Image 1 (cartoon, rainbow, N blue to C red):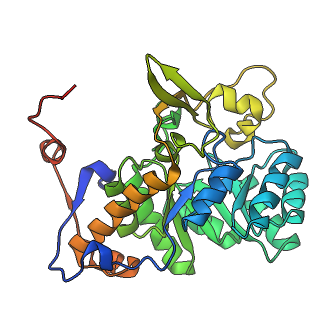
Image 2 (tube, rainbow, N blue to C red):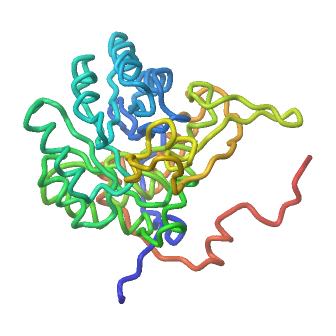
Length: 340
């Protein structure tokens, strides 16, 4: 065990000489943000709003098949692209067929542990019977996992095992890979096969987005940062005059009861589930557009510090340095009294 495994808080990026300002960075009319297929993050309203901003939404699979297909059709009818998540449980083939009939061009084979026989077989079946459909598959956290999914026919692989704010997989099972290292390792496989990687989970700030993309990811998948917006399907809750929205992991008991149990290999559980996620509240954030504006502003700032005009140059010019816990503490606001 000689290799050091790192996450976003373990590193910073070295600034470079720059002639680039944030306003002169070029994202080519797209933003590298994907709304996570979670039942408190992405339904049709989120997919539509984020798509209009240049991002992308994947509608979750805890919906009845007909309702999920209807939501896909509704978004596509408004000239905005979106994806749909499926599991590998008993309704897999029926759901895939209904979604494609509704117009879906991207299917996300969504599993907590994507490096499995069932996920690989699901990818192959979609590619065999629907060769024109793009497949997003995951989740994996190793080079071998990404390689095997690409070999099976995945066009894009989701990377992340346990980094999410509402995920307890690492604590419950002892499994996982710190997210920065997982992304770097899986990017090696993506380069070999000339395919793409989504960094899924562990993104707490715009700085983490910069780090994930600098590590080679093509886009980032967000849950908690979007869950507090008007467009997210979670319920609005007011506590002592302060507004929140509900947010839960797809591995929480409540989410698994609604259909995501197969994501964690528990679709045959009769009464009780072993949860790999929690439920809670996130602060209400208002309109999605304002949240995305701030996140992309941070990304553009990071690009300018690196002297990167576009995302390709961001990857080329990035140099990570490992930092101490004291350096990370220094990086955050400090020595201030909270003003109430």
